[in-house]
Image 1 (cartoon, rainbow, N blue to C red):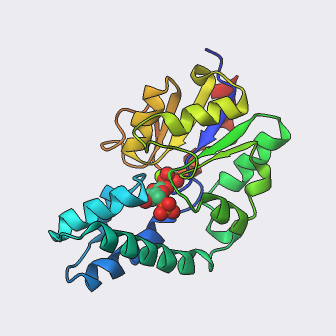
Image 2: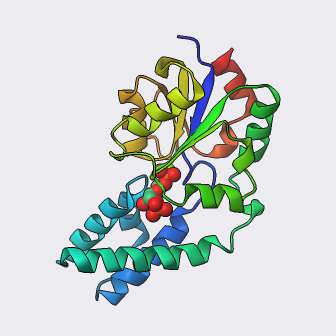
Length: 217
Ligand code: B16
Ligand code: MG
C-alpha cells in the first residue's frame, strides 16, 4: 500500500450542510404532526435521501403511501435547496480550503464521494468544483453507504487502486463503506461513533496539511 489519493465526503467534511438538512426535515416532521430533534438528526447523517425519509417516518410513527413519499421528498429537497442557495465560501469548514489548494498544487489526486444528489450544485456554490479531479455523488450510485460503491467508483475515476486511497468521512456509514472498500479511513467527529476509523480527528481543523503529508509520504 502506498497512499496517494484522497476521497472527501461532502456534508460534515467540506461543509456543514447537516444543519440545513435538519431544518428542512424538521419542517416536514412538523407538517406531519411530530417534532424532530437535533439528536435524532444524527441518524440521518451520511444516509441517502430516501432512507432519511424512512428513518424520519419511523421516528414519528407515521405511515405514508409511496406516492405521498415521493411528494414529500420533492418538497423537502425544494426547501433544502432554498437554504443551500444562500450559502457561500465562508461556510467551508476550517482548514479545508487550504488543504484542497495544497493538494491541487502538489498534484495529489482527489475526488468527492458523497451520498448527496445536490453535491455538484453545492461545490459550485462554494466555488470549489474546479479543484476536484473527480466527483462521485448520489446520482452515480445504485447502492448507498455503507456499501463501498461510491468510493470504489471514485478510485476508478482517479485511476488509483482502492488500497491506495484515503477516505475522509464524518458518518459511521461512510467509515464502514471506506473500510469495506479496503481504503484508509479518517473519521471526523465523535470517536465513540466513528471508532472503526483507522485515524480519528475531532474536527476539520485537525486535518492539517502536515497530517496529510505524513499519511501520503
Ligand atoms: P441529498 P454526504 C449526505 O451527504 C448527508 O450527510 C445526508 O444527511 C443526506 O441525506 C444525503 O447526503 C443525501 O443528500 O438530499 O442532498 O441528496 O455526507 O454523503 O456528503
Ligand atoms: Mg457526511
